[in-house]
Length: 375
View 1 (cartoon, rainbow, N blue to C red):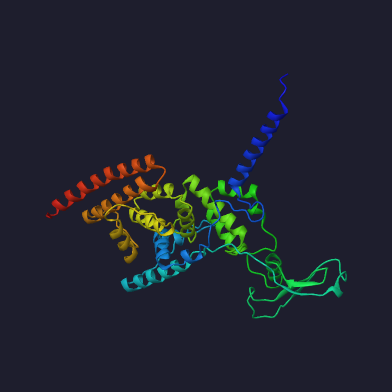
View 2 (view 1 turned 120 degrees about the horizontal axis):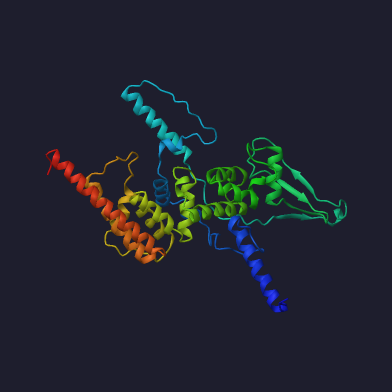
């Protein structure tokens, strides 16, 4: 029997442990030692950049408000259809109300920095040392106060009186003033094994909706959980499952921040969302200093997408003018792929296939125009 030297056995165990760690981290990005940072975390506060008007405009446009998807039945399938007889004015009014409601439903969860807590020590009373073996919590349960402003303090066994840690505050606020859908203990679905099964079933929106209820945007668990979902969506190229939801914008922001836009850009090209592709490039350049696109028309198209609104309803057949505009978009995207993308082969093949399809569309549009007496 072959005997493995002790050094080789040790190396085998190290490799095994590293492989196991990488597999677990792929599903749930649990923080390591105190103060350590993974590449999934934001290296600085993303809040000011995320809240900028131009960034919000770009993210909302890339989300693409498709009313049939925004108002779809999510949990229980309902095959019933309701018909109404309306005048043209009533239809326009109904559509306007639906758009307003859809805008509220697509309100994006904020992307902010992880909270760094430092409980303030209020007093130290040595006379109380040993009075109790456990710490005592005091909570102001007055009505009308915001949970973030509510006074909650703890007396430690050594007599120290200090502000309660965030986890303690969150638990006590949930006990006295429960929020609907939030639990005192973290739901089992967020454990690594259960989370893996849910994501394999591609229930990304369900996970993110539940995360928004259970956690606050500045909690570390929320950042780790959303990063895990976003990476799983990116690895499996399932971007369309989050499109027209409130989570699409934060996901795009996350991917652009970490320079992981290749697959998303490829998806936009294949789905004929070229304007969204230029908006993604504009966002990418805004987040990273020194990133420039050398295409001559980039600045012009950048100003165009920032100053104009994307049409809510797009026609099935594009006009020759639309096809010419798409060619401008495609030229800028091609230059961006050459300068800043890693998956150049796949992207260039998609661009070539789109050009071929656009050429056929152009010939068809010109033929239809001539048939109708146009020039």
